[in-house]
Image (cartoon, rainbow over all chains, first blue to last red; front, top):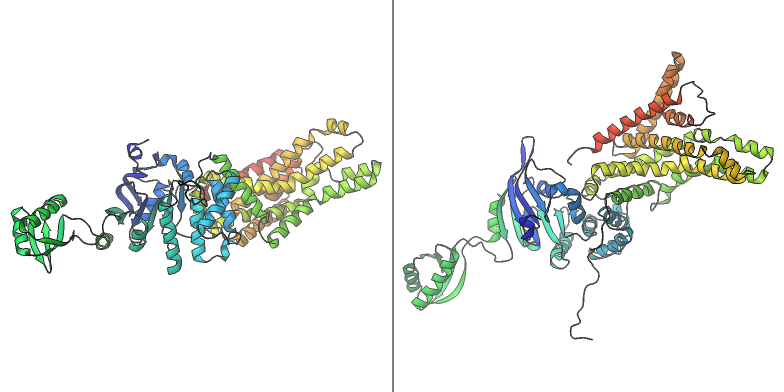
Length: 308
Length: 289
């Protein structure tokens, strides 16, 4: 087991590059996926699908290495047996029933026949297709096909599932259902999720952290659960009482203070120093703190900027 | 109720048991594909042609055994038994076997390309080689149903209807491996050629047309050229007959009507099968996709 796996990393990507002729699909990508739900965010062509297919061993990187659940992609067969994958484009056999497909995919990933039949019923129930399980897939709506696609990806009880643009082509109601299902995977069913999307809201609603890809490179990583703004070492404070006295006291503690409308912007060497300084300046000046928040851009603003 | 009791969502469980290996995945692909090609779990329209052709393939054996059951063990009955020798059974139903293979093999691979299911398969424990092996096995199973099963039925029935079953078995036991090998040659040939041609298109109709055209054109060319140039080896161009002639050559009393050695027919079978395997390797052998 690699050190990353020992440390709990689900996926460890180290210096991965992939070219198709003159097109650079992935350019020296390195990342460690430790969260239970991680979003890959980027515009079309940013390299999301290439990165996901590399994790599955479907694409061999030109350079670098990938480890999935402690296994290198030279063990792609074993990885694919333990992982679930939901492709971006519909690739379901139209002439099969949902139940037959899910049973078949379970068997292909190593489930004994009897277990595959039982689990097919369970996962089709989970995705809300228990009533339609005996219908041919060609009679399904796009939303039902996507849910069938999700069911086949989790039928074999994978530790992790890779979802490539799961909301693609869905109407608002179908998208809502799919996002709820995706969130359930990591939150309730104990399945780690790596989901790609070019829609920021989809990732924010379903994931714990996000990797932003642009032109084949990871240009930003961000945890999503902690705060709604990026911590850049600057805070906004709203003072009750003598704001000038607070500013003077803060300046005396080595902090840079400047007014911003009703707020004061306070900057220091690092986030902890700023927070300690604000506390001490408030005590020293006798001012009260009405509100205190990071002054960085919102996470949405930051990610949109990174996507470019 | 205990104070520690709690409600648990039992609708979704995790599976921690053993997982089957690669062979099981190939077998799963093969048996699901074969069943679907035969019309299982599909509408009656998909079942009609395979079932009809299968019944036609069994018809000579059923007629012979039925007549023997009616006629008893007299000399007429023995003549009936010799009406369709094991060596000639497949050539008797050759057109049925040909149509069956033309119907079945495109159904095994064309829908996967049309529906883009290949990417889904390759995201599981199925690799490209596994996929091809699974589809070859899927083609062999139904083809053996119309090549091996009827002849085996005829053999078993003949043993049971003979006056001295044990004596018949002792005298004719070598026919059993001959029946099996000749059926395997025919099933493998038509299976591989059908899969190779079908792998070139995602449209089932094009695959059926292409397969028929290949068989018809090669047969006509072989016949015309061998007659026009009076060169018997041009008959080898009629590749559709090659596996049947090669299989017949395994039986001692068989003589080829064109006076071509079964070994030559056999080498033609091998050459065509090698080309078919190369086509399949090219179509499914890319590393990525």
